[in-house]
Length: 157
Image (cartoon, rainbow, N blue to C red; front, side, top):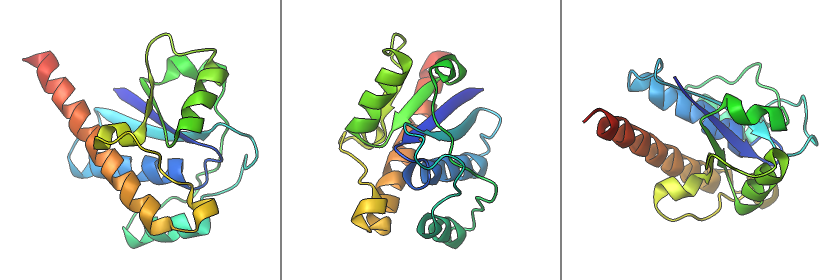
């Protein structure tokens, strides 16, 4: 099983949105036994807090539950536990490398890299634009799934 950890600053908006969307898209594609995602924060500022209400509303609208999800902080010992660590913005990428003491295995990527543009997913906690964040996260997650499936096919073929 390939494990992906989505990462943002507080783990209450962007990274749980990516986690739950990814797992839902994978389930719909019949790939739940192949991939699994979770999410973490680079800070401990929101530790233990639930998914932020506007994000929860978006997930509910999609028919996706997120009950029980609480913010957790990424730790150095998490590095060997995931195959990929996907940050939402450049700051997340830098913070992950700092937490891990580098990225010797090249596991750290930025989400919109998989959407073909490499930009940042803006933090809706500060921008207030949850729909734009949702759109960007969907683009990134769908791109990630395409890349993972392509790599899987190329490995077999």
